[in-house]
Length: 410
Image (cartoon, rainbow, N blue to C red; front, top):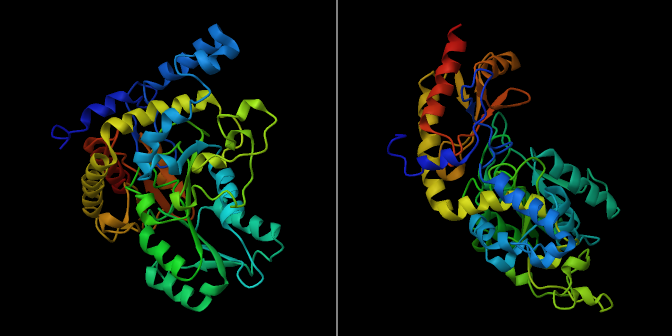
């Protein structure tokens, strides 16, 4: 399968971590931190050299002028998330972007003020929406509506979301869902969720941290009002790197939409005249505040250029076979040993599989790490493994399951 993989050459474009003996580790943790493209250093060095040689003139005279630098990322980022360039901007960090989006799209009234999230949302999202409720003077327990799995299940059902909206829809101002759940790996039908929310008069947004670069998001076609995502997971931009934001084009020219602003959201033609009244940029760029950190943008650009070359369709296709092979091997261990909580249908998941090993605890995960497999432990009992199609091989998956089997046999 590796020999027949049309994307096999891209593995060589990434640094694969090694153990103390120089052997490549089995790295299945791109859902937490993506590996570094080998080109990243050259991209950053270019800006360091221009800074050293040009100083402030680098804003206009650098090989890649810094003034419009974020625009160099827009087209490839838009393709990754399935949006129009007008709808996408790279800026800030994920939770900061989430707050900026809620300034505009969480508009509570006396009767419609609640926010709906999935019950096991990523903690940062939960903390953010609770703080927004408190900021607007509402009780964060009363104002939070949770979309929960059914008893003795981990996955969510859209029918249950529909039932919540049928009973409380006129009280809910905002629906915010992690489009690919960090814990289970469940990928939600965003178009249907958006349609349900809009039918009941709710604004709809998505946290795509575990979706961007992992699954075809088709954000524009989903109709979502906004979305946010980080870039250090599947987009391989480095720890804590800049994030992205999407605002649907139907909001692009609405200058009356409430927002926090700064000079980088002001008209580019008059931005440096300094004394003009604020004139907001159209599209997602109109949510920027400050000039961005170029070194972080350079790292993201290095990875996005690879995505632009490969395309999300090819990545999604390999992802289905790679993760499908992983699932097949895990099932050979027997259902009395392994339970996969991620959806079986490839359309309802990305590359991540979340597994529970029966009668095991963190000690088993630690042994797996010692055996040269880098995965991810999440309390109380889940090991998250993400074979990333850009740089993981079928042999990686085979090695992981083989080493797990050896540990279980011991």
